[in-house]
Length: 406
Image (tube, rainbow, N blue to C red; front, top):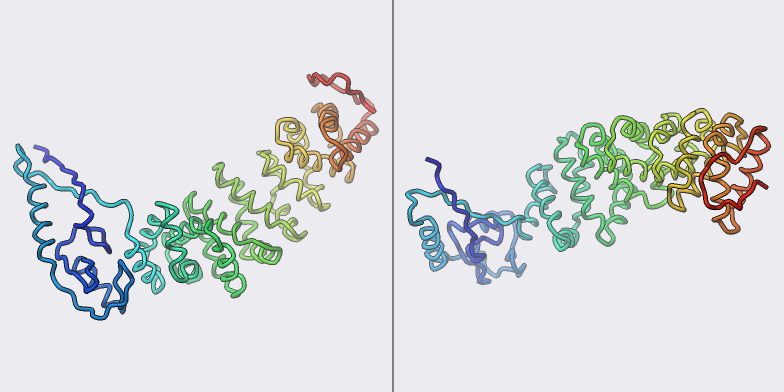
């Protein structure tokens, strides 16, 4: 016969403020706050001289048994387990969904001295519960430094690294954390150890932890110097391009492309991307973020050459031209202008014309006011008309029938 299971909601006064479990041996400090004996003993033996709940300095560390509360807890347990019609039901106390603030402080102190997976996991659960919890952790001493120190240590197991990254990803949204972490990692010249851990997660971690790692990197790449140092370290570019090539997880790929777009500020970084086959990979999935990335890469000769060499790229951009946002349309026009007008690639021009690109470019030009995009559209129309003898408007369906080639 299956035993019945009874889930009980525990009165808050019966829970220890540190462990959040039902107290087995409640004792009271001189501040009047009651704790479970084992929890408060551990707190005091760890060197603290304050009341965990009130943070008042304790004039005395003595505590006395709270016999009244102990008796009430015992009566409550007995009444909860004696149900009519049930010989020996099983009591399952409904637990709080998160650790207490007091317990979080203890765990942070433990993390500071050792990379404990269990402690990191509990803190990650705590900060994921609410914005208030995240703010509490950020206010707690050097929380950013404590968590980041896990990633700077050597020979730490992958699960601990993943939990540390998850915590950072959650608290980075709080005011000032990005700047503190940027200063901590980059100005202390310890980015190699930190980035080695990030690369390890990118190679061996779960999909979620990979996405969180990239978001953390993106958040601390705040200026030109930090972007350059991050991108040039630990073969990071090749690892990220391999991620793009080897998986089809949309959130992860979006995070990778966003990060690469953010840090592609020097020709050497762009060259690394091109050499690792970024253009071909981006051409296979022309999202708006991919178009932004291609618009950055086409600023250098190697990028224009790679785009011209990929038969799918120009055709795919033309196909997407009127189906994306205004910003992405501008990026698409820039890429086409770079390979057709700057590089003057005849094969690309033919692909654009075959895809009814001229008509689409004219539609874009009509939408634009005076500016760089309109000028590039005008240059494109002239280049396509001059380079293709059989150039026609094609059969693109549009109600803007008054548009005619210049």
